[in-house]
Image (tube, rainbow, N blue to C red; front, side):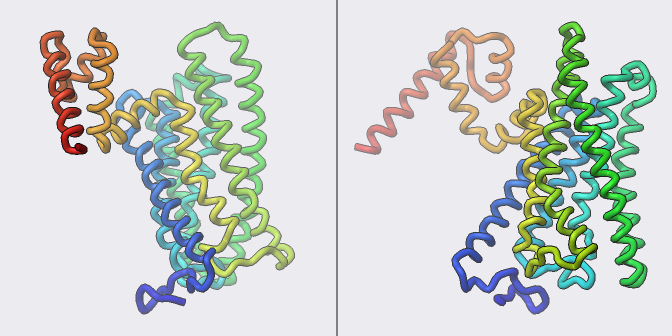
Length: 340
């Protein structure tokens, strides 16, 4: 094994071509997860219209967990780490437990959407934002309080607590499956009878997002879950050299990328918030070029687009649009001369 320092070796010895591929894959995956999930976090926190809605608070909670999961891949996916009893260079399950936070958050988010659609009066009266924030905090507290107890007791007791946790997880997974089916039926048939309105579209959007997210989560996470159960019951499950080569664990961690992607795909409001607060600020030059193209195609812009261009420092009046055209032509001419 090649070593980065005197304590934790890298996950691969790089004697085979696939070692380089898997190593680079984990780097790209971790970076993509941090960027995408972190963009959702910043987009929600920077937009008041999103962070006051309960469903976006649940999205924020899972996106924080996904961002931390992405950071954890830089260790779990690149170094020789094996979580378990006994572990090797492990983190006492601290890093893998981010997925446990998401499992609980998704369950409460499903219950939240069910109550919001089927019992709107009760929901608007009792399920306020402090309640949702308290539920999200509880997801973190419960997950890591159990983990703290598990790390403080002897290994034999810790193994028993872990087995109890797996059994509890089976109940949660079954509940999530039933709730997913119920929410799909509601979105498919019950909301179809409601008259068209903005509230109806918001409910359909939130139900569609949570159903897709949970289906993706269970699809990617269940192979690892089944393998853990098989190993505990029969001692014949698949075993891997470390976390980096553990295909099932990698699939489970892939939720850190798929979940925020579904959020952005399913919510136009979140997508626009992420564009405005993160992506466009990271590429201001591309935004200005697009604005100049807008001026070229349609010099008579609406007041909203004019205000946006004005904030970007571009002149949009009739007299000043000619200045933009002249400046753009000069730049094009300069580039042609340089090429010649």
